[in-house]
View 1 (cartoon, one colour):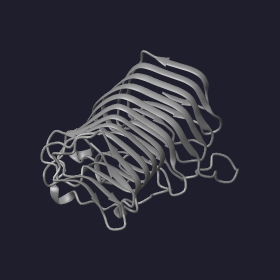
View 2: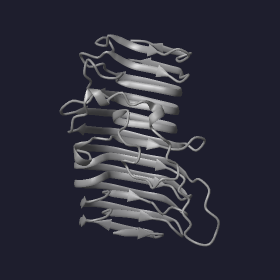
View 3: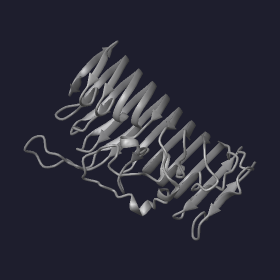
View 4: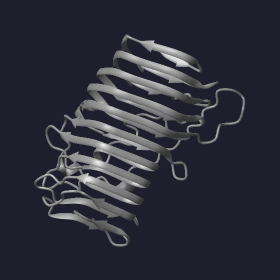
Length: 318
């Protein structure tokens, strides 16, 4: 079902088995607003619930809840603003996902597709988004896990996103020889068509975040069923980060559990280093004003690793 430029729409108690996106909202010509979707099950060769790609107008006042995703080739949740427009005031809750390519894909890009004869639209905005109560089992394409992501563009951050009570379980292995993914190797791909696998394998098996202002992660739990030597959480060019309660699995030879690069202003609380942790928190890219509180990092060989020129201001308290 495609809901395009529509207002005051309710979809409930439906079952979708789709070759393309199962439940898709679009805003090519006018806003899509005052939409509720509830009590649905979806299977798709693409995304489960998707906003976009057409977004010259916007998405406002939308609630999606009680969704079962079973067998999704792409992302269970895909929110995309790439053709201008604004996404503002979106709540998604109570998702259970099995055999999905990725749990979450939030993308602010600049494809700037023309839908009329008017000039291409400027970069849009994505803000005020809440995603809660999600359990996802991730298989990835052809057995290659890529990871969930929230990405904006330089100078155009995604704004004010909250993830709460989210558990992501990666089912496929990611060999140690392939875990050293540099942030510089993850391109911006500003004008590319938005797809959850557009960046290739990410530096984080749980969540990769880039160009975001105002991010809250509350009770985020990421793990893997076999082996994955990547970091659990990577934040690059992020401001106003708040992490309250974070659990992750790691291996003794893994990358740092949490990597912060160019993060300015972060409060991390309720962190627990699992047994066998090497480095728990790695600071780089001039990250500053980082505070770690009420956390148990005693199992880590090195709780905090500030790189040269990074971590100008950080503190760690029990």
